[in-house]
Image 1 (cartoon, rainbow, N blue to C red):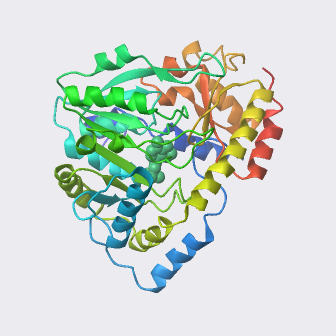
Image 2 (image 1 turned 60 degrees about the vertical axis):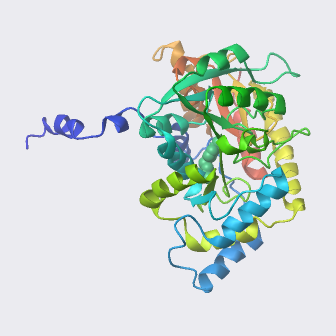
Image 3 (image 1 turned 90 degrees about the horizontal axis):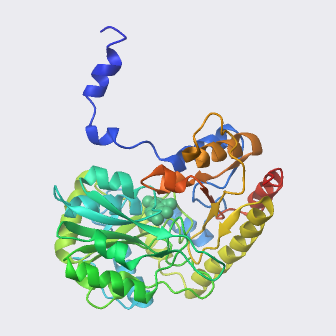
Length: 409
Ligand SMILES: Cc1ncc(COP(=O)(O)O)c(C=O)c1O
């Protein structure tokens, strides 16, 4: 084979679906942080230790020889613990035998759920800015996304909100589902009961599912309450709840997540999951059963610790010249960078200012962030935004503070 014909042949042999999206920008920023020895405030993984009891439970499970495949839809003790916790926290009773599927992280649970319900021609409604994975999830499952803008707050007392008319217009006879993420990454929005009820009415009217990613359910501030869509009257039978251990127990590398869905949807999700991954790591599922029985004080402390970190990073960013949007949940701060000059205006058009700015931050200032455009369908919508995370230990935030002080708005 001649070298010049190789790339052409290779491209023809690749999947058209895989050609439609790039590698994750968020995860690429972590690689750039390592390359430039930068303080990593980009990807949402804690850089502090996971709880000692949970780590001990994993060690014990391996010693006890829980080392072979678990039942494909998940180890019984973890399914039981998920049911018990969901009922305790949200008042919704699920059947561990017919409504729970444990997957390799909530990432796989979301993908399996979408592949389980999507047919050609189906549309999904997605709020933007959105968690980066939902774009490729739509492409891989064959869904056509209909994006609905979340508008940034105009002042200190307001919050990211959608326009009810725009949302209603996105639904139609082809709508199969709406993807919800509350508490939200990247905005920190926590959907209120009234908002959920408005979405419920649309789902019922158009006979659509709600797939709700609730992975930040315990990371809440200023008295915000997490309400699962499954708890909203009339939604239990059309809601697929996606959740996992990653954020609540600070174990993003364990890759244990789950879907809670009505029996018919669960049986489709379980089939997809079985042939995608067979199952999540058996000893870590065992440890998960112990983690989910943590006392309420564990979750209170988690939220209180993050509240302190949120305050710390908000101040750091304000002092450095950013306009941060204060989150009510999750552990990210979306910022507006309009006040900064475009560091690469000569080489990049204004539409990619966020990319040029994030590149400048990681290479010259030594802090990794995520360019706003990775959360939007149209890159121009995120051109004046950059996201930071504060799920980091104090020494990391302090190092970020020292470096960001070199920035001048
Ligand atoms: C909204 C959201 N969903 C899912 C995930 C990934 O979760 P998991 O580690 O369970 O796959 C993340 C990670 O950042 C996230 O922000």
